[in-house]
Length: 98
Image (cartoon, rainbow, N blue to C red; front, side):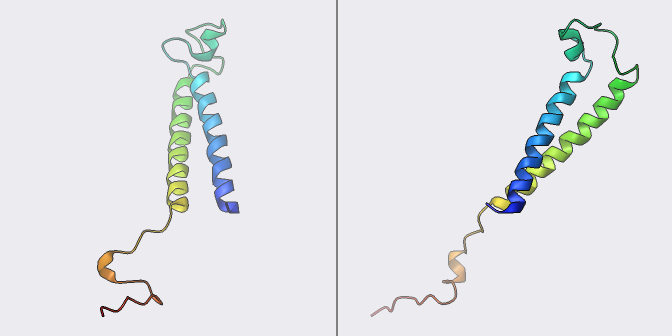
C-alpha cells in the first residue's frame, strides 16, 4: 500500500468519526445526544440557529466522505483487463497453428 492510499484511508476514518459526532449532537425529534443525556429536548446548547448550521455542516461532511470513498475505490481498483478482440499484450507471441 502506498502513501496516498494510507492518507485516503486515514482521512476517510477521521471524516467518518466527525460525521458520527455531528449526527449525534444534532437536535432531532428525540433531542439528539443532549436529550439522551438528560438535557432539554427542545433547546440546543449551541443556540437556536444551531440546527440549521449543523444540518449544513453534516451535509458537507457527508458529501466529502462519499467523494473520498469514490476516489479511494477508483485509485485502488486493479487496471481493467484487455478485451479479447484487441489481441495479446505487446511482447507475447501467439502459438503457431501447426
